[in-house]
Amino acid sequence: AATDYSPAVVVGTGYGAAVTALRLGAAGVPTLMLEMGQLWNTPGEDGKIFSDMLSPDRRSSWFKNRTEAPLASFLWLDLANRNIDPYAGVLDRVHFGDMSVYVGRGVGGGSLVNGAMAVTPKRWYFEEILPEVDADEMYGTYYPLANSMLGVNNIDPDWFETCDSYQFARVSRKHAQKTGLKTTFVPSVYDFDYMRREEAGEVPRSALASEVIYGNNHGKRSLDKSYLAAALGTGNVTIQTLTEVRDIAQQQDGTYTLTVRQIDAEGNVLGVRQLGTKYLFLGAGSLGSTELLVRARDTGKLPDLGEDVGQGWGTNGNVMLGRANHVWDPVGPVESGMPALGIDAWEDPVNPVFAEIAPVPAGLETWASLYLAITKNPERGWFKYDPGADKAVLQWDVAQGQPSIDAAKSLFDRINSANGTIYRYDLFGDTRAFENRFTYHPLGGLVLGKATDLYGRVKGYRNLYVTDGSLIPGSTGVNPFVTITALAERNIARVLAEDL
Ligand code: FDA
Image: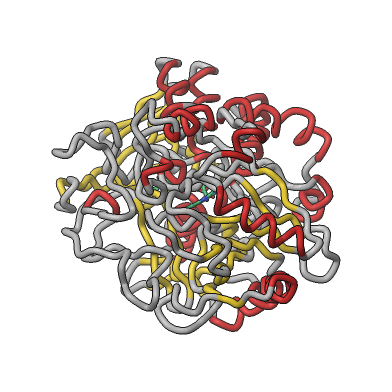
């Protein structure tokens, strides 16, 4: 029997979870959020909450012996990584054979570690990926709501032209323009006014001090400062940290029983307990929510879950690459950790690419231009339950990443040839120019309209919902968190009106 009961439970504290908890709390529904990571609000001995990218310590990583930075090397040297003690740190890299997935761990999920790029996809592409969702409603109501709730802001274009911290982006823009390509400013949830004051030396540095993927000590409006603060402010929402949901079962009366595991920050298991709820919302991210339902189906705990559970997973076509710049084109020693510009070639009919101009926050001149390209890769992976390990294992092979490379190569070959430049071959541990063995943008696994109805209600079960990136069928064409947020707003509005 369940020892504790809450009318509504939200698993996770990322974008989908945070939206859902706020709207439940505001509607007067007592809601418990369960988060496997920590609450990041206490400074360490150095006075900082998070460690930076140049000298990461145990706070950087989720139970690793060594950090696992995306740029494996520089001049083939492993300069970025450090040995660390295993700890409940903020960034995880989950390995599945040919693909590994970066995810945030902690109150705020991915918002703690991401690049803050807050991009709304082109409407025609949204209509292509989710044709059954009313685009008028999304673009008229829910994208504007998500943007304002998240605190999205735009860079001052005059400051951009003169500041030191975006010299790297201006160099890449020049090279794109010489190729006849279009660049576009990228909205952000990093406070650009704070960044301007960082460069002026008026406030402590964060984006300009190589802080991104292991957390930002200042300047970023992560979810703990937006949606989650508002959720707690309703007085109806509580968050339990270092609490991992392991299993979901259903009782005869239709309520759900969760098996949850409590750990401490060193990873010791403090206890395993049961928790009951009537309304269960999964916001554990594409990997987390999908694993919970694949496990529940294949262990027989929720036997009516269908074949679509665990299908339709994609990388958002992520591929990373670097270009070697000429000596007369320095990018400058200080690069803002927050990207502010992208090359927008998404209208290309054959090889659509949206390439964010990414920093190499190394604190020194790198003579390199780095990009995270988002491409339209049609390949999809799926999750298979491994009973021995009690895990859902992503099935994705290296060949499935090739379309991402082909698309990025077609664009960047043109940029190189227009500018007389070449790729960098020293950044990804070996001599490859394109890195597609990881993604920052896991999407799908519990796709809207397939594993769930058109509002995230899981097929086969009442009062069981999916709220997060697992609803999106593998691609958004841009960085995904604004879309995840807007879709969660749309879905919970309907669920509150009809189900609760
Ligand atoms: P999200 O992954 O945010 O949250 C899931 C939460 O659930 C996590 O806190 C996790 O710990 C918790 N959890 C998982 N399983 C659990 C369990 N069983 N029990 C309890 N808790 C559990 N996107 C973008 O739009 N712009 C950008 O600039 C970037 N940049 C970027 C950089 C890096 C380094 C990363 C890793 C990611 C990005 N992203 C991004 C991607 C973006 O952060 C991502 O798409 C969203 O965070 C996904 O939101 P979700 O709501 O799906 O879950």
